[in-house]
Amino acid sequence: MATAEMERIVLVRHIDGAPSPDDFRVERLPIPELAEGQFLARNHYVSCDPGTRSRLSPGASYAPPLAPGAPVDGFCVGEVIASRNERFAVGERLAMSGWASHVVSNGRGYCVKLPDLGVPESLFIGVLGIPGMTSWFGLKRVAALQAGERVLVTSAAGPVGATAGQLARLWGASEVIGIAGGADKCAWVKDVAGFTACLDYKAPDFEAQFAALAAPGFDVMFDNVGNAMIDRALPHMKLRGRIVVSGQVADYNTPVDQVPGLKHTREFIAKRLRMEGLVVFDDLPGFAAAQAELAALIRAGQLVYREEVFEGLASLPEAFCGLFTGASFGRRVVRV
Ligand SMILES: NC(=O)c1ccc[n+]([C@@H]2O[C@H](COP(=O)([O-])OP(=O)(O)OC[C@H]3O[C@@H](n4cnc5c(N)ncnc54)[C@H](OP(=O)(O)O)[C@@H]3O)[C@@H](O)[C@H]2O)c1
Image (cartoon, rainbow, N blue to C red):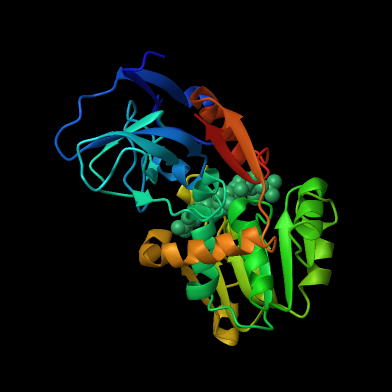
Protein backbone atom coordinates (compact mmCIF):
# COMPACT_ATOMS: atom_id res chain seq x y z
CA MET A 1 0.00 0.00 0.00
CA ALA A 2 1.37 3.47 -0.87
CA THR A 3 2.23 5.45 2.25
CA ALA A 4 -0.35 8.11 1.37
CA GLU A 5 -3.16 5.55 1.31
CA MET A 6 -5.15 3.91 4.05
CA GLU A 7 -7.48 0.93 4.17
CA ARG A 8 -10.73 0.54 6.03
CA ILE A 9 -13.56 -1.97 6.25
CA VAL A 10 -16.95 -0.80 5.00
CA LEU A 11 -20.37 -2.39 5.27
CA VAL A 12 -21.61 -3.64 1.88
CA ARG A 13 -25.26 -4.20 2.85
CA HIS A 14 -27.47 -4.39 5.90
CA ILE A 15 -27.18 -7.86 7.39
CA ASP A 16 -30.08 -10.24 7.84
CA GLY A 17 -29.23 -13.09 10.24
CA ALA A 18 -25.66 -14.23 10.79
CA PRO A 19 -22.97 -11.99 9.27
CA SER A 20 -20.86 -13.31 6.42
CA PRO A 21 -17.44 -12.01 5.27
CA ASP A 22 -18.95 -10.80 1.97
CA ASP A 23 -21.15 -8.36 3.90
CA PHE A 24 -17.93 -6.31 4.19
CA ARG A 25 -15.26 -5.10 1.83
CA VAL A 26 -11.88 -3.42 2.12
CA GLU A 27 -11.83 0.14 0.79
CA ARG A 28 -8.65 2.04 -0.08
CA LEU A 29 -8.56 5.79 0.05
CA PRO A 30 -5.99 8.56 0.23
CA ILE A 31 -5.06 9.66 3.73
CA PRO A 32 -6.62 13.11 4.05
CA GLU A 33 -4.54 16.21 4.75
CA LEU A 34 -4.64 16.99 8.46
CA ALA A 35 -6.65 20.04 9.44
CA GLU A 36 -5.60 22.14 12.42
CA GLY A 37 -6.46 20.17 15.59
CA GLN A 38 -6.27 16.75 13.93
CA PHE A 39 -3.74 13.92 14.20
CA LEU A 40 -3.04 10.78 12.19
CA ALA A 41 -2.54 7.46 13.94
CA ARG A 42 -1.40 4.18 12.41
CA ASN A 43 -3.22 1.23 13.90
CA HIS A 44 -1.32 -1.75 15.25
CA TYR A 45 -4.30 -3.91 16.26
CA VAL A 46 -8.04 -3.86 15.59
CA SER A 47 -10.55 -5.85 17.61
CA CYS A 48 -13.57 -8.08 16.93
CA ASP A 49 -16.49 -7.36 19.26
CA PRO A 50 -19.90 -9.08 19.09
CA GLY A 51 -21.52 -5.74 19.94
CA THR A 52 -20.48 -4.37 16.53
CA ARG A 53 -23.23 -6.61 15.08
CA SER A 54 -25.97 -4.44 16.57
CA ARG A 55 -25.09 -1.56 14.21
CA LEU A 56 -25.08 -3.64 11.03
CA SER A 57 -28.87 -3.99 10.62
CA PRO A 58 -31.56 -1.35 10.78
CA GLY A 59 -33.21 -1.25 14.20
CA ALA A 60 -32.84 -0.10 17.73
CA SER A 61 -29.53 -0.17 19.56
CA TYR A 62 -27.83 2.30 21.86
CA ALA A 63 -25.79 3.38 18.82
CA PRO A 64 -27.46 4.24 15.50
CA PRO A 65 -27.28 1.67 12.65
CA LEU A 66 -24.63 2.13 9.96
CA ALA A 67 -25.72 2.80 6.40
CA PRO A 68 -24.47 0.51 3.62
CA GLY A 69 -21.16 1.91 2.37
CA ALA A 70 -20.28 3.35 5.77
CA PRO A 71 -16.97 2.50 7.48
CA VAL A 72 -17.39 0.03 10.34
CA ASP A 73 -16.39 1.00 13.84
CA GLY A 74 -14.54 -1.30 16.17
CA PHE A 75 -11.85 -0.74 18.73
CA CYS A 76 -8.20 -0.35 17.84
CA VAL A 77 -4.83 0.55 19.28
CA GLY A 78 -2.26 2.53 17.40
CA GLU A 79 0.37 5.22 17.45
CA VAL A 80 0.29 8.88 16.43
CA ILE A 81 2.48 9.35 13.32
CA ALA A 82 1.60 12.98 12.44
CA SER A 83 -0.10 15.63 14.49
CA ARG A 84 -1.55 19.12 14.30
CA ASN A 85 -2.99 18.77 17.82
CA GLU A 86 -0.78 19.71 20.75
CA ARG A 87 -2.53 17.20 23.05
CA PHE A 88 -1.47 14.24 20.85
CA ALA A 89 2.26 14.09 20.14
CA VAL A 90 3.90 11.89 17.53
CA GLY A 91 4.74 8.57 19.17
CA GLU A 92 1.80 8.68 21.60
CA ARG A 93 -0.05 5.34 21.78
CA LEU A 94 -3.84 5.43 21.85
CA ALA A 95 -6.93 3.23 22.08
CA MET A 96 -9.54 4.50 19.61
CA SER A 97 -12.25 3.23 17.31
CA GLY A 98 -12.11 2.34 13.61
CA TRP A 99 -11.77 -0.86 11.56
CA ALA A 100 -9.01 0.76 9.56
CA SER A 101 -5.27 0.89 9.01
CA HIS A 102 -5.19 4.57 10.04
CA VAL A 103 -7.35 6.94 12.05
CA VAL A 104 -7.63 10.68 11.48
CA SER A 105 -9.09 12.24 14.60
CA ASN A 106 -9.38 15.42 16.60
CA GLY A 107 -9.34 13.39 19.84
CA ARG A 108 -13.08 13.47 20.43
CA GLY A 109 -15.07 10.27 20.97
CA TYR A 110 -13.35 7.17 22.33
CA CYS A 111 -9.69 8.17 22.32
CA VAL A 112 -7.65 7.12 25.35
CA LYS A 113 -3.90 7.46 25.86
CA LEU A 114 -2.31 4.10 26.74
CA PRO A 115 -0.52 4.10 30.07
CA ASP A 116 2.70 2.10 30.34
CA LEU A 117 1.53 -0.84 32.44
CA GLY A 118 4.15 -3.35 31.35
CA VAL A 119 1.75 -5.51 29.31
CA PRO A 120 1.36 -6.05 25.52
CA GLU A 121 -0.54 -3.21 23.84
CA SER A 122 -3.09 -5.57 22.23
CA LEU A 123 -4.50 -6.05 25.74
CA PHE A 124 -5.89 -2.51 25.55
CA ILE A 125 -8.50 -3.89 23.14
CA GLY A 126 -8.85 -7.05 25.23
CA VAL A 127 -8.66 -7.69 28.92
CA LEU A 128 -7.60 -4.06 29.60
CA GLY A 129 -10.02 -2.70 26.99
CA ILE A 130 -13.78 -2.76 26.57
CA PRO A 131 -14.17 -6.50 27.37
CA GLY A 132 -12.18 -6.29 30.60
CA MET A 133 -13.91 -3.08 31.65
CA THR A 134 -17.30 -4.73 31.04
CA SER A 135 -16.33 -7.61 33.32
CA TRP A 136 -14.95 -5.28 35.99
CA PHE A 137 -17.84 -2.81 36.18
CA GLY A 138 -20.49 -5.45 35.50
CA LEU A 139 -19.37 -7.39 38.55
CA LYS A 140 -18.36 -4.53 40.83
CA ARG A 141 -20.95 -1.86 40.11
CA VAL A 142 -23.93 -3.68 38.56
CA ALA A 143 -23.79 -6.99 40.46
CA ALA A 144 -22.16 -5.50 43.57
CA LEU A 145 -20.57 -8.92 44.09
CA GLN A 146 -19.96 -9.85 47.73
CA ALA A 147 -17.40 -12.32 49.09
CA GLY A 148 -18.85 -15.78 49.56
CA GLU A 149 -21.37 -15.47 46.73
CA ARG A 150 -21.94 -18.09 44.03
CA VAL A 151 -21.61 -16.88 40.43
CA LEU A 152 -22.73 -18.16 37.01
CA VAL A 153 -20.97 -16.84 33.87
CA THR A 154 -22.05 -17.52 30.27
CA SER A 155 -19.73 -17.47 27.24
CA ALA A 156 -17.11 -18.20 29.86
CA ALA A 157 -14.27 -18.76 27.37
CA GLY A 158 -14.75 -15.33 25.76
CA PRO A 159 -12.79 -12.28 26.90
CA VAL A 160 -15.64 -10.78 28.92
CA GLY A 161 -16.77 -14.06 30.47
CA ALA A 162 -13.30 -15.41 31.28
CA THR A 163 -12.27 -12.14 32.91
CA ALA A 164 -15.53 -11.86 34.85
CA GLY A 165 -15.20 -15.37 36.23
CA GLN A 166 -11.58 -14.86 37.28
CA LEU A 167 -12.35 -11.52 38.91
CA ALA A 168 -15.25 -13.10 40.77
CA ARG A 169 -12.87 -15.70 42.24
CA LEU A 170 -10.25 -13.07 43.07
CA TRP A 171 -12.92 -10.96 44.78
CA GLY A 172 -13.99 -13.82 47.00
CA ALA A 173 -16.80 -15.69 45.24
CA SER A 174 -17.34 -19.09 46.84
CA GLU A 175 -17.81 -20.81 43.49
CA VAL A 176 -17.82 -19.71 39.86
CA ILE A 177 -19.62 -21.90 37.35
CA GLY A 178 -19.00 -21.22 33.65
CA ILE A 179 -20.97 -22.23 30.57
CA ALA A 180 -19.20 -22.49 27.19
CA GLY A 181 -19.47 -24.34 23.89
CA GLY A 182 -17.33 -27.47 23.57
CA ALA A 183 -14.99 -29.62 25.65
CA ASP A 184 -11.81 -27.69 24.77
CA LYS A 185 -13.23 -24.36 25.88
CA CYS A 186 -14.64 -25.88 29.07
CA ALA A 187 -11.29 -27.50 29.90
CA TRP A 188 -9.52 -24.12 29.48
CA VAL A 189 -12.12 -22.29 31.58
CA LYS A 190 -11.73 -24.77 34.44
CA ASP A 191 -8.07 -25.76 34.29
CA VAL A 192 -6.43 -22.52 33.11
CA ALA A 193 -8.85 -19.75 34.11
CA GLY A 194 -9.57 -21.48 37.41
CA PHE A 195 -13.38 -21.57 37.42
CA THR A 196 -14.88 -24.09 39.84
CA ALA A 197 -16.56 -25.91 36.94
CA CYS A 198 -17.57 -25.31 33.34
CA LEU A 199 -20.52 -26.88 31.54
CA ASP A 200 -20.63 -27.50 27.79
CA TYR A 201 -24.04 -26.25 26.63
CA LYS A 202 -23.62 -28.23 23.38
CA ALA A 203 -23.29 -31.57 25.25
CA PRO A 204 -26.35 -33.87 25.03
CA ASP A 205 -26.64 -34.08 28.83
CA PHE A 206 -26.21 -30.34 29.43
CA GLU A 207 -29.65 -29.81 30.98
CA ALA A 208 -29.08 -32.60 33.53
CA GLN A 209 -25.57 -31.34 34.29
CA PHE A 210 -26.83 -27.81 34.72
CA ALA A 211 -29.65 -28.87 37.05
CA ALA A 212 -27.16 -30.82 39.17
CA LEU A 213 -24.56 -28.02 39.39
CA ALA A 214 -27.07 -25.20 39.82
CA ALA A 215 -27.82 -26.21 43.43
CA PRO A 216 -27.61 -24.41 45.87
CA GLY A 217 -28.34 -21.57 43.46
CA PHE A 218 -26.60 -18.45 42.16
CA ASP A 219 -26.29 -15.04 43.78
CA VAL A 220 -25.01 -13.50 40.56
CA MET A 221 -25.51 -14.41 36.92
CA PHE A 222 -23.18 -12.60 34.50
CA ASP A 223 -24.84 -13.15 31.14
CA ASN A 224 -23.17 -12.60 27.78
CA VAL A 225 -25.42 -14.66 25.54
CA GLY A 226 -29.13 -13.81 25.90
CA ASN A 227 -32.61 -14.73 26.95
CA ALA A 228 -32.57 -18.53 26.68
CA MET A 229 -29.70 -18.77 29.16
CA ILE A 230 -31.22 -16.19 31.48
CA ASP A 231 -34.56 -18.01 31.48
CA ARG A 232 -32.79 -21.28 32.25
CA ALA A 233 -30.99 -19.71 35.21
CA LEU A 234 -33.91 -17.73 36.69
CA PRO A 235 -35.40 -20.62 38.72
CA HIS A 236 -31.93 -21.22 40.21
CA MET A 237 -31.28 -17.68 41.40
CA LYS A 238 -31.00 -17.19 45.16
CA LEU A 239 -32.90 -14.65 47.24
CA ARG A 240 -31.86 -11.10 46.19
CA GLY A 241 -29.87 -12.48 43.27
CA ARG A 242 -28.59 -10.14 40.54
CA ILE A 243 -28.47 -10.78 36.81
CA VAL A 244 -26.00 -8.67 34.85
CA VAL A 245 -27.14 -8.30 31.23
CA SER A 246 -23.74 -7.81 29.63
CA GLY A 247 -24.53 -8.96 26.10
CA GLN A 248 -26.70 -11.17 23.91
CA VAL A 249 -24.43 -12.83 21.41
CA ALA A 250 -26.95 -15.67 20.87
CA ASP A 251 -29.69 -13.15 20.02
CA TYR A 252 -27.88 -10.45 18.02
CA ASN A 253 -28.56 -12.18 14.68
CA THR A 254 -32.27 -12.73 15.41
CA PRO A 255 -35.05 -10.23 14.72
CA VAL A 256 -36.47 -8.96 18.01
CA ASP A 257 -39.87 -10.62 17.46
CA GLN A 258 -38.13 -14.01 17.22
CA VAL A 259 -35.80 -13.65 20.23
CA PRO A 260 -36.74 -16.14 22.98
CA GLY A 261 -38.87 -14.64 25.73
CA LEU A 262 -38.48 -14.92 29.50
CA LYS A 263 -41.04 -17.24 31.12
CA HIS A 264 -39.74 -17.36 34.66
CA THR A 265 -40.33 -13.72 35.61
CA ARG A 266 -42.34 -14.83 38.67
CA GLU A 267 -38.95 -15.58 40.26
CA PHE A 268 -38.32 -11.82 40.38
CA ILE A 269 -41.17 -11.41 42.87
CA ALA A 270 -40.59 -14.33 45.18
CA LYS A 271 -36.81 -13.87 45.29
CA ARG A 272 -36.63 -10.05 44.96
CA LEU A 273 -34.30 -10.46 41.97
CA ARG A 274 -32.72 -7.60 40.07
CA MET A 275 -31.71 -7.69 36.39
CA GLU A 276 -29.70 -4.77 35.03
CA GLY A 277 -27.82 -4.06 31.84
CA LEU A 278 -24.79 -1.86 31.35
CA VAL A 279 -23.17 0.27 28.69
CA VAL A 280 -19.57 0.14 29.79
CA PHE A 281 -18.79 3.67 28.57
CA ASP A 282 -20.85 4.98 31.50
CA ASP A 283 -17.90 3.84 33.61
CA LEU A 284 -15.23 5.58 31.49
CA PRO A 285 -13.97 7.75 34.41
CA GLY A 286 -13.03 4.56 36.26
CA PHE A 287 -11.22 2.84 33.39
CA ALA A 288 -7.66 3.98 34.24
CA ALA A 289 -7.77 2.72 37.82
CA ALA A 290 -9.37 -0.57 36.79
CA GLN A 291 -6.78 -1.05 34.03
CA ALA A 292 -3.91 -0.49 36.47
CA GLU A 293 -5.33 -3.11 38.85
CA LEU A 294 -6.01 -5.59 36.05
CA ALA A 295 -2.49 -5.14 34.64
CA ALA A 296 -1.02 -5.79 38.09
CA LEU A 297 -3.02 -9.03 38.30
CA ILE A 298 -1.77 -10.07 34.83
CA ARG A 299 1.85 -9.28 35.68
CA ALA A 300 1.50 -11.29 38.90
CA GLY A 301 0.12 -14.26 36.95
CA GLN A 302 -3.19 -14.09 38.79
CA LEU A 303 -5.30 -13.29 35.73
CA VAL A 304 -4.98 -15.14 32.42
CA TYR A 305 -6.33 -14.33 28.98
CA ARG A 306 -6.48 -15.99 25.59
CA GLU A 307 -5.87 -14.12 22.36
CA GLU A 308 -6.30 -15.20 18.71
CA VAL A 309 -4.27 -12.99 16.37
CA PHE A 310 -5.27 -12.65 12.69
CA GLU A 311 -2.92 -11.02 10.18
CA GLY A 312 -3.94 -8.06 8.02
CA LEU A 313 -7.04 -5.89 7.88
CA ALA A 314 -8.55 -8.04 5.10
CA SER A 315 -8.87 -10.93 7.59
CA LEU A 316 -11.11 -8.86 9.86
CA PRO A 317 -14.52 -9.79 8.35
CA GLU A 318 -13.80 -13.50 8.65
CA ALA A 319 -12.43 -13.09 12.17
CA PHE A 320 -15.55 -11.14 13.17
CA CYS A 321 -18.02 -13.62 11.66
CA GLY A 322 -16.41 -16.42 13.68
CA LEU A 323 -17.69 -14.79 16.88
CA PHE A 324 -21.18 -16.00 16.01
CA THR A 325 -20.34 -19.59 15.05
CA GLY A 326 -18.40 -20.48 18.20
CA ALA A 327 -15.15 -20.53 16.17
CA SER A 328 -13.59 -17.81 18.32
CA PHE A 329 -11.81 -18.89 21.48
CA GLY A 330 -10.73 -15.86 23.52
CA ARG A 331 -10.16 -12.35 22.26
CA ARG A 332 -9.89 -12.07 18.46
CA VAL A 333 -7.62 -9.26 17.32
CA VAL A 334 -6.24 -8.38 13.90
CA ARG A 335 -2.66 -7.19 13.51
CA VAL A 336 -2.83 -4.42 10.92
N1 LIG B 1 -22.64 -4.03 27.81
C1 LIG B 1 -21.48 -3.58 27.34
O1 LIG B 1 -21.11 -2.42 27.48
C2 LIG B 1 -20.60 -4.57 26.62
C3 LIG B 1 -19.30 -4.22 26.24
C4 LIG B 1 -18.52 -5.20 25.60
C5 LIG B 1 -19.04 -6.46 25.34
N2 LIG B 1 -20.33 -6.72 25.71
C6 LIG B 1 -20.94 -8.03 25.44
O2 LIG B 1 -20.28 -9.03 26.17
C7 LIG B 1 -20.49 -10.28 25.51
C8 LIG B 1 -19.19 -11.04 25.43
O3 LIG B 1 -18.31 -10.34 24.58
P1 LIG B 1 -16.90 -10.95 24.19
O4 LIG B 1 -16.15 -9.89 23.49
O5 LIG B 1 -16.31 -11.62 25.40
O6 LIG B 1 -17.27 -12.04 23.10
P2 LIG B 1 -17.44 -13.62 23.23
O7 LIG B 1 -18.17 -13.98 24.48
O8 LIG B 1 -16.13 -14.27 23.01
O9 LIG B 1 -18.40 -13.87 22.00
C9 LIG B 1 -18.16 -14.88 21.04
C10 LIG B 1 -18.55 -16.21 21.66
O10 LIG B 1 -19.94 -16.20 21.94
C11 LIG B 1 -20.40 -17.50 21.98
N3 LIG B 1 -21.62 -17.66 21.19
C12 LIG B 1 -21.79 -17.34 19.90
N4 LIG B 1 -23.03 -17.68 19.51
C13 LIG B 1 -23.64 -18.22 20.58
C14 LIG B 1 -24.93 -18.78 20.81
N5 LIG B 1 -25.85 -18.83 19.83
N6 LIG B 1 -25.22 -19.23 22.06
C15 LIG B 1 -24.31 -19.16 23.04
N7 LIG B 1 -23.07 -18.65 22.87
C16 LIG B 1 -22.75 -18.19 21.66
C17 LIG B 1 -19.33 -18.38 21.33
O11 LIG B 1 -18.67 -19.10 22.38
P3 LIG B 1 -19.16 -20.60 22.74
O12 LIG B 1 -18.38 -21.50 21.84
O13 LIG B 1 -18.83 -20.72 24.17
O14 LIG B 1 -20.63 -20.65 22.43
C18 LIG B 1 -18.38 -17.38 20.73
O15 LIG B 1 -17.06 -17.86 20.66
C19 LIG B 1 -21.09 -9.96 24.15
O16 LIG B 1 -22.48 -10.25 24.16
C20 LIG B 1 -20.84 -8.49 23.99
O17 LIG B 1 -21.77 -7.85 23.17
C21 LIG B 1 -21.10 -5.81 26.35
